Length: 350
Image (cartoon, rainbow, N blue to C red; front, side, top):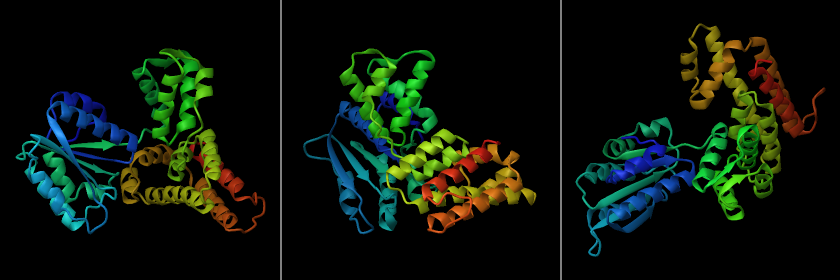
């Protein structure tokens, strides 16, 4: 059974279940969820904990199965935690996880927590994950997206008795905070805690936040896609500046921009051939937040504009590989900024 992360606290108030499976790429939120489950379990008498980390295909699962099959002499109840950083337990691991799922309900006194990274669709429909999902509680832990980050910060401040000023000034303060910690939720958490140490409970001014919060953003080349397809020029330029400062390879940044352009072209060609937009998106493996952005962009995106973007992407490909191109900046990052700006404008319908 699936439980939303924001419902975990309510769920745990009713008592812990024998099996929990947490999967996602946000370490802070996953750790907080595990801590909450542990705390509820300890309150329910689970006093012993064993931890296993699955490294490689040759991991010995016999120790995990043995731990789950026998209670400690000194504790009535135990917690067994299994971390699988790769998300790929292998053939033997898959069979072991299915066995754990089958035994979960009848294995009284043992609480099993399995921690996984973000899983693709094929893995989530596989036999071992399906067995775990059917037998236990699964929590999908998604990253806090940029548009939701100001509200997340405000909620975390409220938990420690602090808040920003009301109105537009407060919104600008939260946006400033979000810009400084984007892509680095653990750092955001630490900066929020720092505000609790620096200032008393109550209202925080914009200057207090600005003076305290460091620029700890971590820019992800794949998040650049979201900024560009949203037509958000300011965010796109900030992310490119951040990627350059972090030493990201120009060729990877160009690949990200060019791949979005090529994907738009493939889906548009399918639509021109008579396929409905949902079918064209599915066939081209466009899912999630990018699917929603494509649905907004494609109805007003013309073939001529797409052709110009493809030509620009080809031009910038040469620049990042050291070729000179007339009428274009010779600096790779300046050329990437120009290409990103073109895509932003087209996606925004300008």
